[in-house]
Length: 245
Ligand code: BJW
Image 1 (cartoon, rainbow, N blue to C red):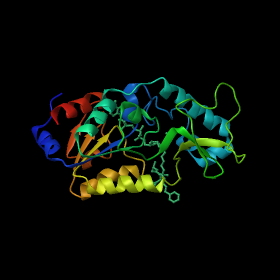
Image 2: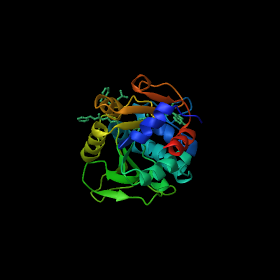
Image 3: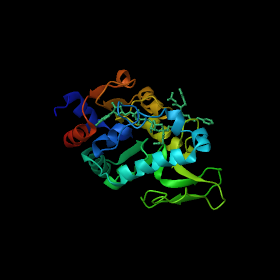
Image 4: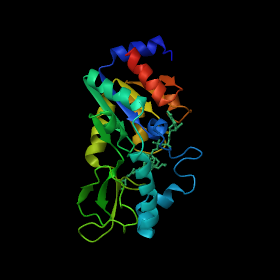
């Protein structure tokens, strides 16, 4: 894949780099995106599944959806794009990866300078709001036909992810906000750019003078903000960026 020589110049000049990833990042690992035809919400409206109200109404339905996703992710592998980002982190001194994904594939590829903005499929929290958090060691829960998992306080456990109308973890959002405000290059990969506050990060970086690169197979609301657009799949575009850097 050929890259614009002006983009290559900006890569070499960049000192503080932020990458923001969305569901398209993991599409080539076989994990469906949310909003595409055939995506995760084809049969349900988001508000039927990804809200605290949906969980209160029907925890078994919501758990069935998340458990299915855990199985899909557990069987998947990081793709060439995840691996390119993990290698770039080792080469570049000031690097921050902000993901909206809850699948854990960036960590499995080796990324460490990472903020998970929307939580993780692999953590369980208490649906009644008590502070207990439990890791699942990457295993789908509840196993088999077991009853839904319960917190030690007696309430249902829920997936440790951020649903619509919920606050993002304050420390995670502050880290992402500070990194985007101070970066000189931001790469937005595989996100539709419609879910806030994550969708504001590229505009924040742009307002601070950063170069914005979009990697996406389709046009998005971020496209007009981008200085460079790579209209290619993440697993093709990111290794190409790595090779040119
Ligand atoms: C490829 C590809 C390939 C495909 N290569 N590319 C400001 C304005 C308007 C509304 C709001 C606002 N601020 C807040 C809101 C409300 C709401 C919101 O944003 N609503 C909008 C939908 C309008 N936001 C919230 O509620 C957030 N909370 C909040 O703001 O709290 C404030 C508060 C204050 C005080 C008290 C209480 C609250 C929380 C948002 C949480 C989002 N959660 C989800 C579910 C997470 C758990 C789970 O995974 O189940 O996060 S929703 C879902 O969308 C998920 C994703 O992370 C997120 C973003 O989706 P993403 O990643 O962009 O995926 P897709 O499918 O949309 O796009 C994929 C893209 O990839 C496409 O562009 C493809 O073309 C591309 N692609 N293959 C490259 N191979």
